Length: 228
Image (cartoon, rainbow, N blue to C red; front, side):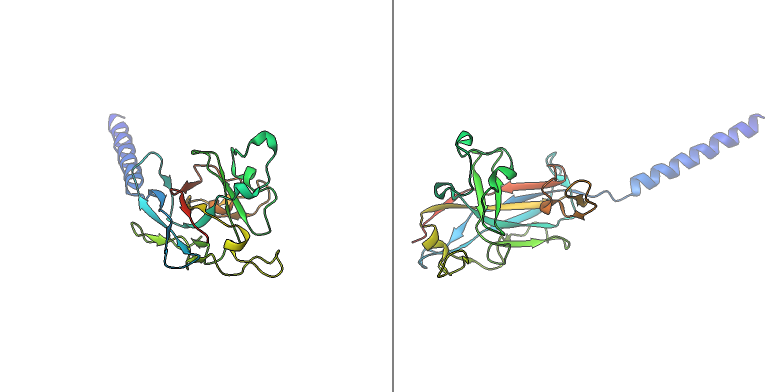
């Protein structure tokens, strides 16, 4: 009886060691962070062309999130003095969430709230195209490398707004100087159901319902840019 008991104890110990080995030998998704660089522009062109950057890194920081390294960035502008987005007088042009910054925007524009800063709305003044955004929702970015926030520089002189006839450039429609910055977003490792209960899953940076632990959204430093 004693021998049998010892055999059971030995067996259980071996099984436990094997289980611990599997856990220790697993490959958990590493914590990563994303940072947004400063706006750069060439004074030699009038109006100038804008560009920014973002960077993804593996990080031991408590603020890092489990991520496969997908996401990207966009250029955003402070258009509050033009009444964009539309906000009630009680808000005093202060926001608490991204949805506060989406009212009255033209089609295919996006709005974002600087929740951790001055609580100002910033908008991507156009559709998600190469000169305003650079995103990779499924293929990881190379780490510790500065990637452009737009695949091509944003030219403030190109006619682009179909709601105006004839087409107008950004500098004509929204004469400056104006503040710009980079908004970068890192997807968490899991897809997010958006809206909840819809059965539609996608990257967290595209999901309006995603939490801060499901994605990391950061602003770069603002820079005032002359548009004429």
